[in-house]
Image (cartoon, rainbow, N blue to C red; front, side, top):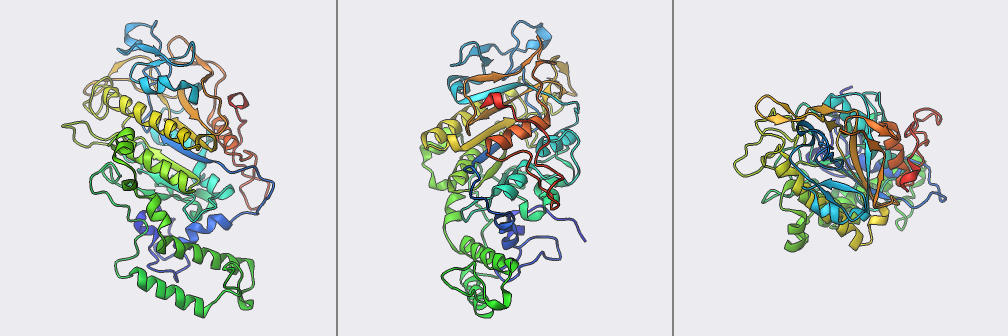
Length: 475
């Protein structure tokens, strides 16, 4: 059997209609199979209210010293050129390229003691995605786990990924797009397979809900009506109930998923949610007219429409006169011909002020809409950068450093205006309260009202969602 393929916008509707209900020979899934995550669990009326998540990946690894954990008293070759600035929180400072986030520090918490031992991009990304220090090759990502345990209750995909990882830093085999051992029914809907395939590009169109070229919506509706005649529900007022010849839980689920797939393709709810053109020009300007800003705006729209988890890769786009080289914006060790403190696409001078403005806008927007209490916002990379500034292949930079780095959490019960953990005098090593990938993932699940000890395996006692312990001090 061929391995499952990433679920791209075209693959999602590879069925070309509602009647093709099983995995195709190419390994792609039908839309009903992708929606099957909503039915793939026991209902529990005593579960706490489900929450949503926007997970921002600073792909490549943000320098902690130039952002969340400045060390102004360290030596010249360590502290860098940026001065620390005060935030709204007394005693808490950040780098000067983050003035907007400094103003709203009461809305988020910063962890300054993230730590692991692997300075290799792809492996560290696998660890971050799986929440494990030694992930299996088929470990599901956080989004797939959430899709399994707390799927969307609206007629929307539960899990969406905005901007595909690219370059050598990507996890092996694109496992984050397959659902891992949970199955491809828990894979995300992927938008953005190329660096310019995002709503920050003029003329961008979401094609995920278009039918195949030879199948119009009217033809799709005819197929649906024919399917209903061949295999009708027992009670047309209740599409989940099935006729006696197919009176099984599996058949009932299949009818329900067929109905959801048809409604999603034929209706306007999902199309509207994925269309950032519905936003005002002022709001689009606030988020920033670049890939990251517009993807964050799209993420907010999707969460508002009922998507449970949206992953956003913080690809900041190109500066004027830049040529595209990689999506690894934050991998700033001078190997791309741009120094870490420069204004090109791979420099903090370009990327960090734009990230600052966009993320601050997201937090304010979620708060204004009453969504921040029910939406966890996470921003982190796979590791940090070395305290010592060094010469890269063609410019100065900071190299990979997993031993001590920072993460930001906001919303979903996280205490704003707080700092957890501490680094030493050069932000090289954790001074207190180290946070492992396991404890970080357990904390995220706890924030989403999911018990980290919940078993994901069919046997009911192996493979917990996380083996870590939540950082309860954050709540």
